Amino acid sequence: MKASYTTVSANHLNLASTLAQALTEKGFGPFFSTPCGILAPLYSALESNIGVHTIPREDNAIGIAAGTAMANQRPVVLMQNSGLGQSVNTIASLVVPYEIPILLIVSLRGIAPDRTSENAAMGRLTEPLLSSFSIQSVQLETTQLAAQVNWAQQIVYEQRQSAAFLVPPSMFGWQT
Amino acid sequence: MNKTVAIQQIILATTDQPIIFTTGYSCRIAAHLCHRPNHFYMTGSMGLATSIGTGVALATGLPTVVVDGDGSLMMNPTSLIVVGAIPNLPLLHVVLDDGVYASTGSQEVSSKQVNLTRLAHVSGYSQVFHVGNVDAFAVQLHGALANCFSPIFIHCTLSAENTAVPPRIDLNLAQHQRQFSQYLRTVTGFNGQKSQL
Image (cartoon, rainbow over all chains, first blue to last red; front, side, top):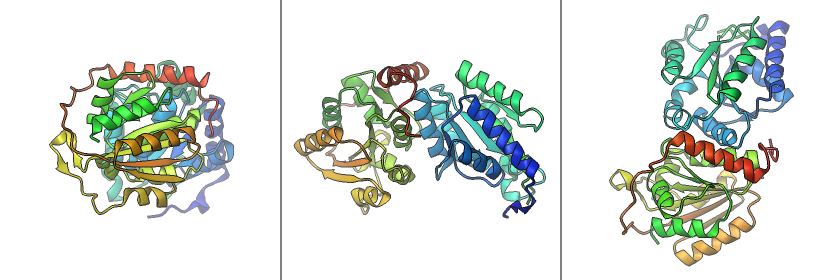
């Protein structure tokens, strides 16, 4: 099922620009992404701001991000939560034991209003999975973006741990 | 040339270039032969050594070496396509091909029908080489490291391992990562400012 972007409003686009700007102003980057419809407005905003490397598999994106993190950059990986499933071993055997600081931005397919059955299980599993890895996550809220970016900066830069933003389908205007 | 001899050649041919060793015997042999600060031992995440090397090369602009295996490459051939899409990536990707999954009981790798150098070439690597003996390998390694401005692929056919393989890596992995990161900070001068991103 493909999202229709005719319904993405100026507000949604502004929100995506605000988040992209907040992230780059805080020094996050480079950005790696396997595309996702929910994150498409953020992807566009980042592309026109700093650029995004499109990587065909999410586990590869995390691997590349890990290399840039060890080279003292502040990488961000954008993915759909189906890709988080794809990346379980990469997180378990690379990111967690080597303590590599990466910011993950993970969309929440399988959460209302997305009722696609193929995404339901990962929708339920996303937060508990991250929590089991001891990766702190927070669901993005439109009115809290600046504070949430500060929170991520604190965890990823200061504590040198990975963290995750969870993005609900409605955040940037996604519709089934 | 077995895997130990091949890794010895890689260590001899390199000085300060970052090197990512894939999981399994490659890590163990390298750590045992000579542990240097430019080594990163990837003990898990099979298939991702090339992805990590891609990130290091992108961020530092330094010629970066990946020591991969045939089984690892078959697990993640996507990594070739990602590298091939970045024409100015200074990455030397060495595949040590013994035809088997050596560390899990020498089960055969199902890639005999695949010409790995052609696969790298059509994925976008600028230069690809195949070597089957130690002298040819040494020559190609030196040549590639002297001119590593774009992705280079060396496929190296190995004979079976006839020496005892050293034990598992006994490092604190988080500490190892931080030391490698500190090493990259030192060689780049700061924090990835030579980035091509």
